[in-house]
Length: 130
Image (cartoon, rainbow, N blue to C red):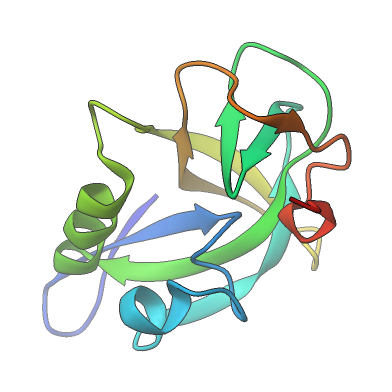
């Protein structure tokens, strides 16, 4: 979903599930000035793997991915794209997210093209013990 704020900047929702979440090492540098929309999970099931950082793959249906949604401007989305190596590393795709409030929204999620590391069966990176 794209929305426009009062400054006419295009705003986007991004769903983060790893180092960009609150309490993890990339949050402050990338999302501290972005609006937190809420915690949520993917509507569809995917697979999360981790090897220090998480890798979500689209073609395996293991669990709902747990994360947070932020409203970001184009500049922030470009910075996150650079961090994630989009489109050559991770690939960004809009998917339905169910917020804790039960509201459904569409947000960008970064998928990795193939599994890497160990399976995190819960879909929550906080459960990874690397």
